Amino acid sequence: MKFEPLTAQHALVRTTAAPRLMGDSLSGLYDKASRGLMTKPLKVGARASALPLREIEAINAARIRGADESEIRALVEQLHADRSKAA
Image (cartoon, rainbow, N blue to C red; front, side, top):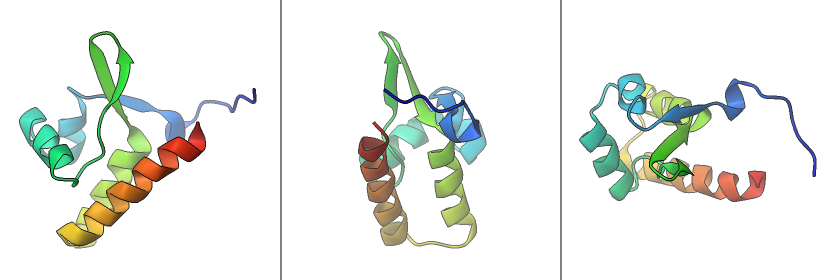
C-alpha cells in the first residue's frame, strides 16, 4: 500500500463546519447533496462525517464562475467517481 504525504488536497472538513465555507446552512448542505448539487459526506466515525476540502473548493469555484445546476451536477458526479479512483 502506497501512502502519500498529507496536503490540503487530502484535508477533510467536518460536515458541521463545511456550510461556513460554502455560505450555506447544514440543512442546505444536505438538501444540495440530496439534489446532486453537493457531494455526499463521508463517514469518518460512528457519529461523524466530513467532506473533502478539495470537493468543497471545486464546487465553490464552479458557483463563482456561474455554472448552472446541470454543470454542478456533472461536477458532483465526477467528484464522486474520483473518490473511487483515489481508494
